[in-house]
Length: 441
Image (cartoon, rainbow, N blue to C red; front, side, top):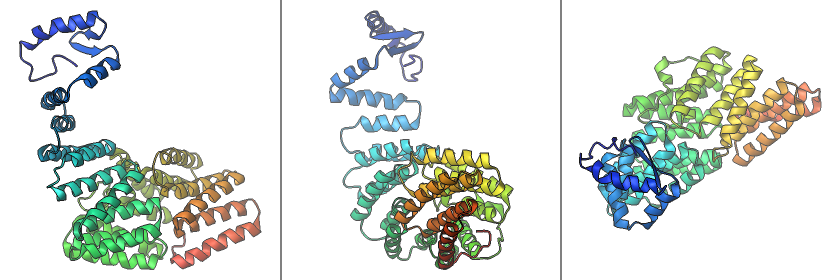
């Protein structure tokens, strides 16, 4: 550490410490470089820590909690300085986790939140459940879907019925949708709606989430979005009203309606107070998708790039591969093959680091289009087949539809008219069942 970086040091500290530092340096244990001192090998530090008594380690953490350079480190050291549960330390860790998430570090936020759970006394059950819910949310945003899912399932099982359990199930359903598909997410959302009771804000959030989940029936989604909008208006929650309007616009547009865009603030790329933390679900993304199909590519590109930037800045790893697939699809429509290919490759690399399966079908679809446009028909067939397997496993009719369309496009481009007719017919049949009426889509 820098000997001059400690604001609490006394003027007598350095003269007392310096002979010991010089002795250690002579033995090759530490190196003194100006005012900085460091161990010459990390094993020396590990040996000292492992050899110290527990009370000595706690005392070291206590001192560090007074001088660490930022709130997150101070909260961590404060928690490690106490022996057993301590609500004050747990509350500090929870605040530090929130700050870490706000600066775009959900992985660090999850680590702090887990420590907050461990330090929460048994008598503070509501706070403990809330912190477990926060931990799962941070893990999901960081792309660690499996741990987030296990944590939320345990939280929901432990919670009594009511709004808190509804909120937990709402987050769990979003994770299940990405991890196992609509069939797994739908009953959890229905249970959440029963738990929400008279809480109109929660009811609105659940209706909006249901509208996003039921992609295989656009008419039903439109009704859910209408109900969510009405509930959000009754609650007077402006962030939820914007989200519900965007959901309604998306579904109405895909059902063949006009694209009557609301003012730009409807597509804010900042996380609303009450709404999805996942950027892929926000109005800026939904409106960008509509603008692609309306052939308004420059506007769509601006919105989807804003969404991607927000996901990167907020550390929303789960949303990034899907947003990159949307941008790759856009550039295919715009005829920018190299840009599309770059987005698709980036999306694949990011997706392989994310612990859920939703990204795969969307990315395979974009890659199949690109391969066909660049006359790589065998590669397009392989991409479409890979995506179809992922979409079928998740029960995602929308993804199955667009992947059959991409495969049919590839077969048509290769002059294989029988195979093209088979794939395109399946896509058209699914489109009719889903209710898709937007001509461009």
